[in-house]
Length: 431
Image (tube, rainbow, N blue to C red):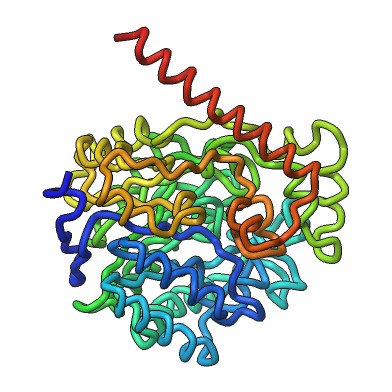
């Protein structure tokens, strides 16, 4: 393990000290759309905890692409805080990455200060909001903004940018036949649906030059009716590879249709309803209090460690010329070793680093270390209005968690543990 997990890796023009990357999991730590002390403290603690690179999540290329008030967007006022952050990450020996993208219709007027945009006209029940079709001239302007965002990130001191092309954000909205109903050069055929992504990646690589690493997060499959399946996901990844990016992050699922495919496990409905802001999401907050509605909106995906491995191996068989970065269900040092054994050179993870920023240092001391993250997804449930935080950290810091939510946490953690044990027993019986 020492020879591989903790060996350096050259990701394009930047060299990571090891194979551990903190994934771009939304922190909700940018109140007023600017870097905060909480964002600084968290990512510096993760860098100090031993990761090779930590990823800030996420920064929109334009105000119109902000989906939460606690997100960044490209503007000069954010530069000083980001530069302070990247300097501190570098001082701890880690590299700094930032996810850039545009959320498309996954927002509303109060947040993005305009009518939300997408590949096509429609109504997004998730927000809820009407959204309008982007004009070709606006598409071209957004492509340029992706390039400008790379320059912005370089000035802020980042070593790497991650382009968000999955999870039903804007690039994915153009790719997916579920959300793209255009009849021009950006819609219809596969070649047309990936045109926006290809133009963005051309622009990004032009601005990345030879001193900025570029990775792309893509969906292996959308896991929803009318979306891209695994076979089309492989075609999309092959398109990405043509741009000579330095890595492809293999994810899956759709935020508004199959969020637990992305996250693994069950959504803590009571937690979600409790922390969801009344002012901007009153209708959804009310709906979540109706029995069974929450379960229908966010169906449970039985949690298992390394839950994307089966699908990721399919991509590994097809794509050889670009490093594939694994993400999904990393809980322990043994998981990390398995990823290396399966032939992936890098991997991303976030859940355990929310609970335990020192995870990597612990694995270095004990190869079998387990973080003890029991996957209640409490950290996800509170992210709409508060900083993403593990319930154990919340309790340690003296913040009160209501009794009904404590009971939900216990129930969901018990369910996740039972699911893992059943899967282990099934594997043992097969052998």
